[in-house]
Image (cartoon, rainbow, N blue to C red; front, side, top):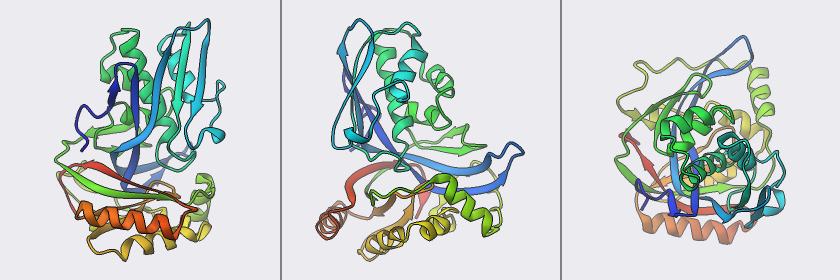
Length: 293
């Protein structure tokens, strides 16, 4: 069960947890092309791993794990960029264990960067607070500040305004990615072509309590139009008893379902793995704030 200490694997390693959007509302668009949104981020006890392998003559990155082949080890990787952001003259050897599919809409790169900041801040004894690391992480991406704490938070603006909320429950969750590409710009383009209206902002924001059945993911319809397997995944999840909600996360293609019991979540995960071995399917747990399904 995840708790405040689950981020810490050991003194020399750090977990980079999966990020899920329990809902995602697009409420407008700025003149610069960025979209204004409202969302609720939660984090899982499953993710990539970052480890410090020791000093080296230069900063270098090794990658292992099931998705290592799709992961760059050069300066385009946010792990190296995070290390250099924390210390421009950084040297040393880092290991990224890539357990999460690449470009899956699960915050993988941002989570890796945030975990690197936490890990090296501790090992190098830089002395930054989490708030200071979050501010620093903004230079790496809009999701990085939220991933630094990896605690539930309401998100607004273009994803850069965070309002933390207390975690009050830990629930079993099945996460699925079909391992098929889905372009975020193409999903937004499809939404624009459809001339979908913007969602009315939730008032007050952030809400004291979110009712998930009264929220949704504004991008789900357009993502399904681009990748029909998303509908199949959601149908497979929703048919299970005790599936309390099934939804796409972010711009896709990953989907998740919250279950009422560990036993049913485990049964669903096992069955879906057997029926669809071509998908990436995992049973995890998410910390959720005070929400009503």
